[in-house]
Image (tube, rainbow, N blue to C red):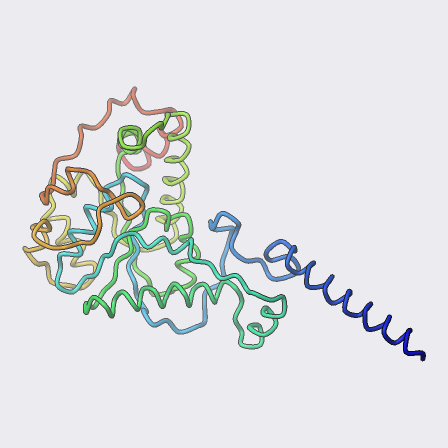
Length: 291
């Protein structure tokens, strides 16, 4: 073989390697690999239970819609000496993206795929926050968690759940009142999506159901029920949440309204009349006994 042809072969091999790397970089996530999370971070069907031990074995997740009173519930729970209920953590947006194509094979030899790596990341976030708080039980109330409830159940087989319900039409009213530029044509389908996921989760997971309307009307009774579900003694100081620090009240962290900032549980708005409930939400409103 001549020196020239040998050099040409090396150049050609180098170009092939670069082409392969470029193709790997441009390949859609998951192409040619076991399916991972959907692009939007939502559940995409049945998910196999994780076999990796968790640092936090039994976290609590509040499964709810946006504007359903989850921030009020979290500050009441966070006022308990043994419960850490931080601001919204948005776990579904913490994702793992392997930096090289061969990373899948390397991690595969350890029995880890992208899903398992993400579970480990989420678990470490919860463990870090729980350790930082010095408390015993962590509660994550991010509303979008309900969109990935199957993944949460797979990641934490021993997780516990609080299903927080609010009249769907009241939820729509609250979103329209708070979100600048919001219109019913966009908000109603959004709330329907959340409520459908809640109902699916309620059908397959065990947990305690809490209604926002009852939480605001009888906060002592409802928080006692939640504490009993969690195996903890109720503490009167839970109702005085305004005397404690609960982190920032601002967008994406949770509710930031004046009613919440008052430090006192405020009554819920009156329930809408039956004929004011959007047609798309009537079935779920009936299923939840609001109609």
